[in-house]
Image (cartoon, rainbow over all chains, first blue to last red; front, top):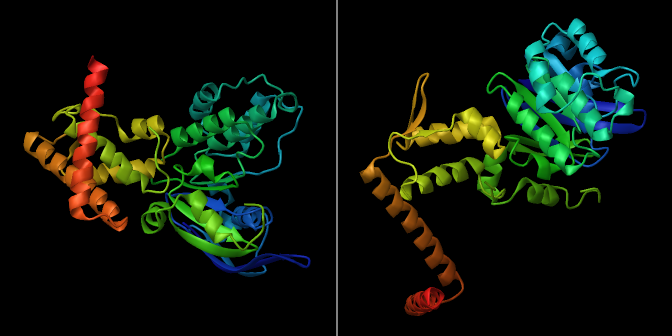
Length: 234
Length: 128
């Protein structure tokens, strides 16, 4: 379980998060939805302990994020792998660094995602690089999985492969996943919990199925309604 | 299968299995996919599939035997009961939608009869 209590975060004069309370239940796949600059990445970075809140507290399984870093696998939006690495080298680095690295899972996903260990990270397509990043994150048996914009700028077919890999690798109950994205379409049937954020404030958070039942709307439709008065990004 | 994203997905999963049982494509004792297999097949959150399976067990549609898998439990009585229930729901929806358009019951019935007759004729033409 991840809990945000009255969390605020500023970067200079920009208010990234403004007193937010968020609850990410244990064992759920949560969609973190909002336009660019809404505060999605800030939430991710607070959970990983890369950034600290100015006010309020963030708890990962009952403790401060910094103490729980080994429990969290994080896929950042930016390319964080050395372009001269072969995929195999990146995997060796990760396996040495994280005790929860699962070699057999890595091998399984490698073929599921149709990647080759000899690929040089800087020389492959954007879609393949996205898959490579995902492979390295999913090969850890981390109880918390944070994926920041895993679909951005990636073609439809590859998006589908990524969504399939997420379902394939998901361990019910034990794993909590947070996916931030614009492409709600892609994750409609993938998430069971949703958090809508805009300009650093939480507009809505609920169980996805409850929302559909209550509103007879898809998550995309709900998002449009929730953000109607907000930015034009949606 | 394609889901309607404006309705709870676990309910649509249950309806799919209900339809299978009603049409007798699924019979008592038949094995259905494991939750994991099904989640991958329809590309849906495994938690949602788990919810649907649990609900189907509560409804007496299926049972899960430890180490063996999930099996259809509904026999002929249950099948008829479910068919009746689903038919009632569809009819109720139809009536309430027609009424909300302002049609009177007599007109609704007449329109339905006319429509069924037309369909029958079309089907006869197709056969010829």
